[in-house]
Length: 255
Image (tube, rainbow, N blue to C red; front, side, top):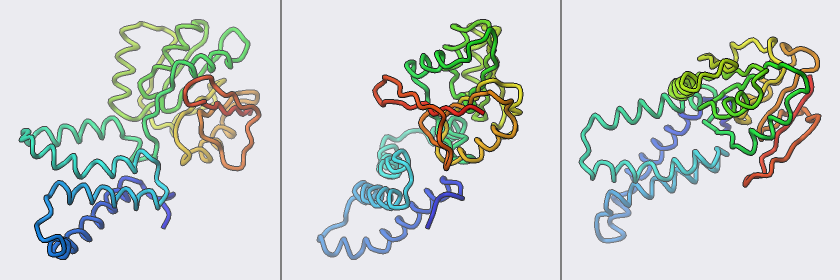
């Protein structure tokens, strides 16, 4: 089994469903062996551990593994609190609006730290005005940092997850930066030909396709910069290691 070509959320739910079915069938035997009915919380804890193990076996990232482990017992705890039923769909809707790209493109919400933003500032081409785009700009912190320190250049964020886009758009309005713009758009529909620098902090999944798009659309001499994630079979022209806690690497290609 591979997970490369299917939306991960469906595989994640399928693993939970299969594990639940297996435990449901096994619980009468388990109860007979231990001599009492195993409490529901411990059943769900066992489900989480088994689902997490299966998820790791199929080479999902640690975020998915941890989520699989804690979700079932957390559901039981939440039900025990007696919260109003409308809380659950509201939480689900908010999670979908924030992590929209996880289901569609297998791209989690990663945030660029200040040290990495400072490193990006040093990588900007040495000319008076450039056009820089962050594909999957999240909450927009990187672009606000760059726009405030390079007022002669223009910075663009492209984001398709609704809540992060709204958050970044509102902050841009509050700060009033004329050289900063956020676009609510799928990154695959963005024309890259107008930019001098393309930056992304996505996941391993879209990198090959995105690099091919950059090669096709960017002007010669433009920069393609990936935070942490390599492009298969494409050696970077340069790698910068940031002096932060996770030793972030910026992989740089000159088109």
